Length: 203
Length: 195
Image (tube, rainbow over all chains, first blue to last red; front, side, top):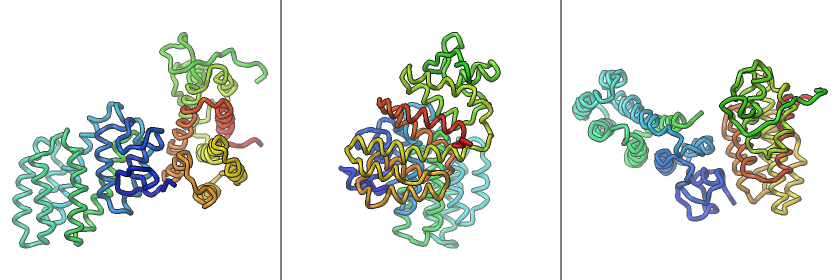
């Protein structure tokens, strides 16, 4: 029996459960797989990792996106998707952490930087500032903010952005396990990442 | 219409009317002579379904769409798109799914779905959803899975219902189902009102 509820994948048989990408394969009429041919490989990778790292309740919010993943392979939108992902990392993900530790000035500068190429020095100074706040605010948030800034300063380009968004999902899940105090902000970012995936697909 | 329109519909879209007309191009041509397969005078739901149905139907059945050409004009913003969406959902639950169940030899389950009240609004939509998830239909088919996914999407007029119905029509070669799809478009144009 197929269950509408999405679970962590992959599954060797649909009867054992369905993950987000397996559900896409199912309704597209493709053989059982978590890598359906009709899906943009970039969206597939992001979708698989979001599915696997989201908590059970938030994972179900991927269900309405299942039909819209169909037909995204070779639809010519992957470059636009990379830009959306990069924009989310610089203007939503890192600023959210910086705001949490009282570095509102840095996050405002980041949100208002027109060219993301110029954001690397801002990111490096934000990282230094985040490390400096560690003894004043919750060090767990400060460590995570510094990690976020480091990750973007050293590795973020348009082509790596979707993979980095996926990585934030994994980081968030691990942080919540280790430090439950961070759960509210991680949840906000997880919901925002689902919204990003939504915006990455044709309406 | 007393005289049928002198139109022969072909698969779209076409660069110029001399290359042929699909359903939506014929509507636009009839409306103001413009050549486009997305005329502004047509409800986006009807346009989306009409374009796909036109392309999926075999040549002979496609000509059954000709009488719809004048009726599709001025359906944009006519306030009937919510009713149209429920007509599509009703078709998926009470026409398409029973058709599939019959093919699998599950005639009792098919009849059970056909016996449900027509879906015309949210309460009847959710009553049908309860029936789909009831123990009675304990074996989910891909069709019912897809329909349940559609239930998670809002608003009803988002177009995903149309895409789902079209996808099923595109995957079939069943003439009975084609005719049911033509009947659906007929009901959708009038918004389900036959007063």
